[in-house]
Image 1: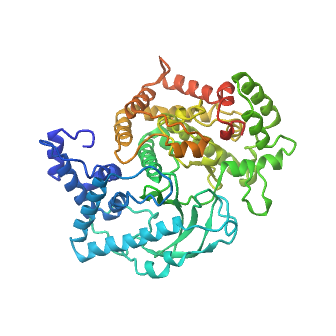
Image 2: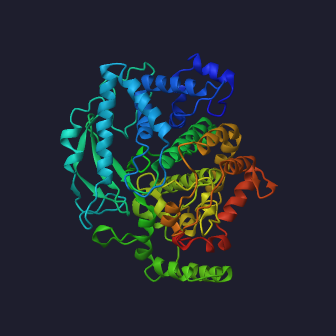
Length: 540
C-alpha cells in the first residue's frame, strides 16, 4: 500500500476492509507516519489512509495509539538540540485522529486521557535534570541507591490508569478486538526511586509496577538521539526473526536477533525496555568509571601487564598516515591480548553449561553480524553491544547509524561488522570457523531467499517521511566530534541493500559461502581495523 499509493486496485482492496486491520500492525508506525499527506486530484491515498488509521486505532488501540501520540507531539523537542521536528500537517492530522477516537465513546475518551497522562509523566521524568553525583550506575543496574521519583511524575497524576497497559509489556493481538480490562497488565505506578545509567542526557532507569505484580525495568530517555530510528530498527529485526523462525535450519539453531521494545513519545524523548541480566561489552572487558566498588574489567583482571585501552587509543589517535596506523595497530595488538573467553569460565562453571553458552554466543554473533551487514548497521563499538549474562547472547543497542551511514563519518567505517580479536576469542579455538561460519551462511541464505520481502520493508523504512536516515551534525559530533553533514540518498541505500541480498561484493557476484568468506575476511582485516576511528577501539 505504502509503495503503491497511485495504484487504484490496491486502494480499492484497502477500502473494502476485507483485510483484517491486524495485518497492517507490523507497519503501523509507517502507516501513521503518512498522515497529513497532501491530497491531490485523482489520488485517493490520503482518504484511504485516514480511514485505515481510524480502523486500526479502533480495533487495536494499544498497538496504534502510541504512534499517533508520537506524531501529535512531533514539535516537542524539549530544548534537546535535536533538529528533527514534525511538519505541522502531520501534527494536525494526528490530533484529528485522537479527536475522532475520543468521540467514539466514554471508554475511548478515557483510554486517550489515561494514556496521555502516563506519557506526560514519562517525558517529565526523562527530561528531569539531576545534580551531578546524586545517582549513578552501570548497565547492570549497579551504582548509587538512586534518587526519588519527582513528584510531578508520580502518585497524583498516575493514579487509576487501569486502561493503560505497561508500555514495555508484551501485548498480544486480540482477535476479538475487545482488549478487555484485566486481560493485560495495566500500569499501576512508578517505583519509589530511579537511577542514572550514565550519559550526557541523563537517561534514567525506572521501575514500572504492573497490575500483574511484576516490576518492569525501563529506560526513560531524552536528548539528542532520535528514538524513532531505534524503534524502526527493532521493527525490522522483528521481521527478520519471523523469517528465521520460518526456516528449518535457522530455527533448529535458534538463530535470532536480540530485540527490545522502544516507544518514542516525541522526536527527543521516549522509553526503552531494559534488558535484564546484561552488561555492556565494554564494561565487561574494560570496566567502567561509574562501576561501584572499583570493579575492574576483564583485561585489567586477567592481563594487568598489558597496555591500558586508553593508552592504545592515544597511540592510534596520534597517527596521521595509513602506514603509521597499521604499524601502531600491530604494536598495540602485541601489547593488548584478548580475554573474552574468561566470560564463559566466570559465568558458566560446568562443562555442559560452558559449551552450551559459548555455542549460543557464537550463533548470536553470527546472526547479528549478517543482519547488521545487510542493513548497513554502523557505530558498533563495544559500548553499543550488550551481552546477556544468562544466555551469553548479544543484544545491539543505539541503532541510529544504519544503511551505511557509518561510511559518511569523518573517519569512514571500513568493516562490515564488529569481529575484533576479543569477539572472536569468545568463540573458542575454532574462532570464526565451524559454528560461526555455518551460522553466518544459514542466516545470509534466509535473508537472500527473502530479498523481495526485505527490500519492500526497507524501502518503506528508508523513505519514511517522519525519519531522516542521515548523520545529523549533532549525531556526528556526538560520535566522532565531526561537523560534516554528508547526506545519503534513500535510493542509493536501498540499491545497496538489494545488491547485498543478490550477493554482490564490489563488482563480483558471489555465492552465499563466497560472500560470507569475503565478509569475515574484511571484518578481521588488520588494514581495515587499523583505519577505524580510535574511539571504536578495534583492538578490543
